[in-house]
Image (cartoon, rainbow, N blue to C red; front, side, top):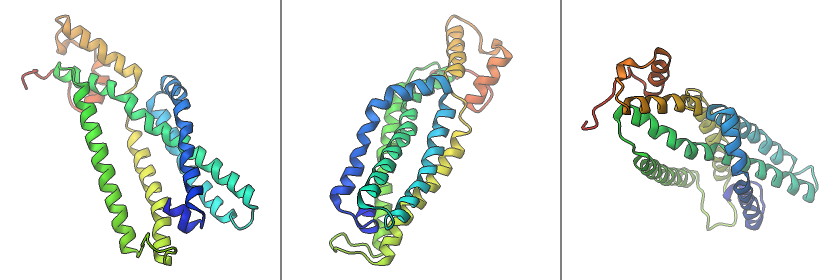
Length: 233
């Protein structure tokens, strides 16, 4: 909102129009679920991060073209960029929620306990905490840069800080997330192996008798040698 108003010199109503483009996310959820099934979570989330990174360049183009295009053409360009932003943002935002049932399966193969509600609660807590801390940090950076929302204009230092937060913060975050998600090996196939092992142990099988291929998959997910932990622990 502040970036559009003070760096793009547009109205708050126009910024609200761009933010309202997020409504496109809801009807796309079935498509995202299809991508998750066909491509796997790693490929799908990497594609989301990759295209969102490219859209940062699109935003730069929109800034540069604001003085060369007519008002209607530039508005169309900005709205198109906002729609694409929310499409790919919702793609990589949807996938972590879809992966939580798989995570509790990995926990269950180690401990014998099924705790999806625990993981969901922890995720919600961390998400809200990190979101609040991020907002505080952004506010502190803008304050140090001389930003004051009560003024109708902002100094150049504040406008530069808005641009850095809008592009630099997002770019660094996307690169970090892209690198982290490359290590993700949990998908429907590997989760199926985990579920088969859970069923085998429930039926009285010994964890030490697991097939070597399945053991490799399980150990790649849990991060250490496969050994069933006693539920009491």
